[in-house]
Image 1 (tube, helix red, strand yellow):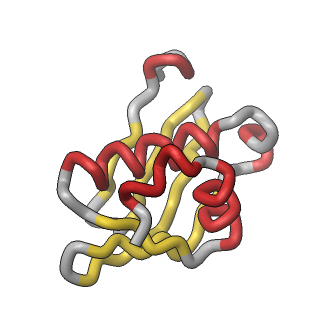
Image 2: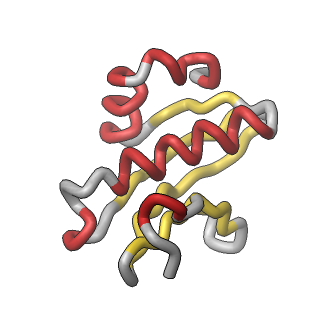
Length: 95
C-alpha cells in the first residue's frame, strides 16, 4: 500500500467511484457523469480513516482529475458541498 503522502486517487469506473487507498482502507466518492459534469453523489471514509484528512485528500484528487479531463463538479453529498465551500481555490471546476 502506498504511503499517505504518495497515495493517488483512482477512478474505479467499474464501480463508478473514485477511491483513495490508505493503510488497508478505502475512502471513496460515488459519482455519475452527465456530459462534462461530474456529480459527486456520496463521499465515504471508513471509521479508521475518519479525522485523518483522507476524505479531503480524496476531494483534492477528484478536483485534479476533473480539471485534467475538462469536467465540472456538481457536489450532491453534503461533505462534498462543504469541502468545496471551504476551498474556493478549487471553484474553477465547480459546476
